[in-house]
Length: 113
Image (cartoon, one colour):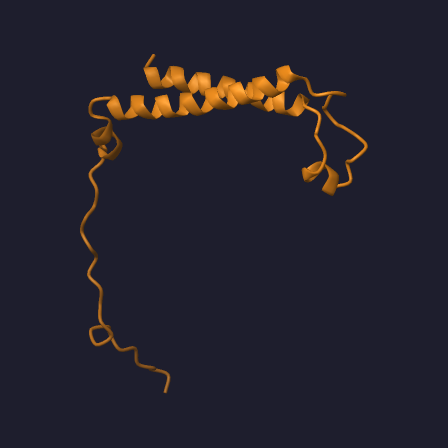
């Protein structure tokens, strides 16, 4: 298993946890919830947002950013990463088809007349 695969799995887990933590929080007013008429009702929130949820949101967001940056560094440090992206097993057809100018095209005559 490559280092990038490990980082990718961690990024997916942290992103999922971040979505869950954000959905659990109580909206603080304004924003999208009040503009769509959901001022009095909550779908997935709690009564009072605790300090734990606020700190976990910032921690998970920071961790997600760090993991993304580290995964980018591991891709760039992989030897031959640039050439593998552009190399292909199939040959590329580089021939340009010849185009006919209007003078070279055959003239269609109307034989019915």
